[in-house]
Image (cartoon, rainbow, N blue to C red):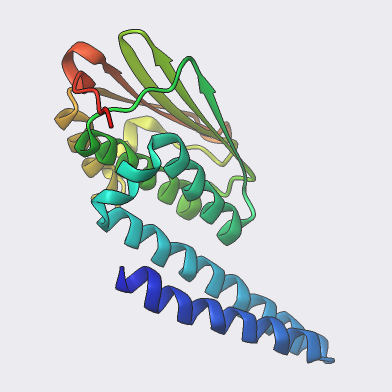
Length: 200
């Protein structure tokens, strides 16, 4: 809450100040530096919002997976300019809050990787609801990578995604080739993974 309400608001005010300075600047070099500062600040603001939502277990419970993912993609677009879309196939269903939070955090990590490494201009997310299964896929048009080397990536992000998928008794799929973008898919069966339906 402090991250979102306090630090987030201060960053927003700073962003408005930089916008104002940019309107008053006359020198082209100054304008370029101001634009760069604004891009960095936008990215930082998106990261703070993302972290604050990740730490708040009620956030996903109150919004649901679709709306939470949609909000996250709005931050991605604001920070990077990547064109993002969300599509839902089937009838949307609510699940146990703890499990929805795990799904959301897997999505967050995947989106972070796109922002940091993919150099993408387009990102499509599809949520598919079947009578006895759920799937979410995230496809970008970025530089792609050799999936054989996925475990060699720096950091623990991909390992965290795998561990969370395992906690859901789900399967995390990675499809990519250098120069051909990538797709991350989380698949789960109701009977094994998300059978605790969440009802108001």
